[in-house]
Image (cartoon, rainbow, N blue to C red; front, side, top):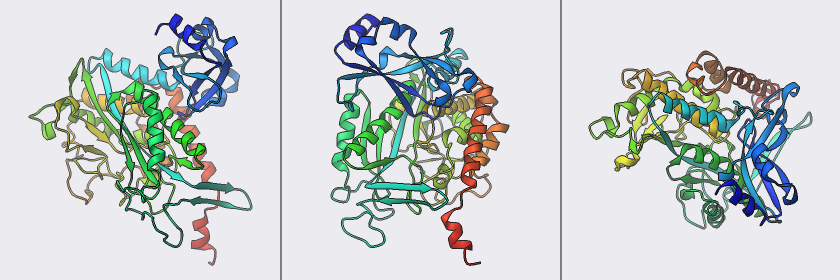
Length: 456
């Protein structure tokens, strides 16, 4: 629809809701009564304080949110008739897009790849893993440092049937899959919103589930991820449950990743496909995955940007701990899906990211790392990244960062490959922001310290 058609359409609603990404990739919003929505709303936007979104200092924080008319959808969680739009963000004089804003970073990464002639499109299929709990409470105070989870799929400390054990949940059926109907409701809303959903199922852990996208344009998928989280959380809340996308909410149980299947197109041709290549991958695809693995220690600061991320990235839970690739191996950082037979969808899967990441930053960073590998014609085997088979991890390959602090140090040393899309000033802000989060957490006594040291 063009702008005039959109203006006619919005008059059918009582409110227009404008959704804006904060620096972590979470939706914020402002809602306008329809009487105050004009053509100028869509041309000049609405001003807001970007410092409260994590983007700018209060000394220069005015920005403008402009609705993207291509993103309009009927709001599924409002009592009044409301149409929602995802917004772009521009500088207050509207001279150019704000270059820290997630959508603008991803756009710039894609423009760079197109300009240097490597590809015209990035196609991705994220896998979204999450938990649904009966309740979650947590407290950090001088009196108490604690969290407590209740779930009908796990009875602590006694076992009460039907229950799912710590690693017995994969593709289980009801009654063990207790949230089957709830996920159907979620997926029904997601498909009504136009999302290209492949399937949903119970994951390995108790109270752990997955909704997976089909392959889609990267810009569309990056917008869909926060919208999926928004739908999942609201449907869960309306039904008396709590949704969690934390990478590792329960000790000893499988964690939640956001695996990203990906390929590059040049025109309509999948440049990752070569029937004569290793695993039917082209030299371009192999150099691309080598670029991701080469820069993986630094990438993790963006793709796995929480301290909780590194509680998931430990051996024994199908989570990658080394920068290696392999065919059909879920312990590898990059898995080559063995079941893919069609050249149109020949692809790789980067298994490290999780949903605490900002999806636009994650997609842009992966793309730039991979393209750097293509430009340098990296050979993943010569670089020592594999292919490796079996469950035993190679001892001669360095581990991925085991903490957010280590990943941030790697990003500080290795970020030139990101500069075509990520401003240097933004990356330095990101490093300092995340280091402050580490400092906050490091000052809080841990319950396990009481177990280890209280009686000494």
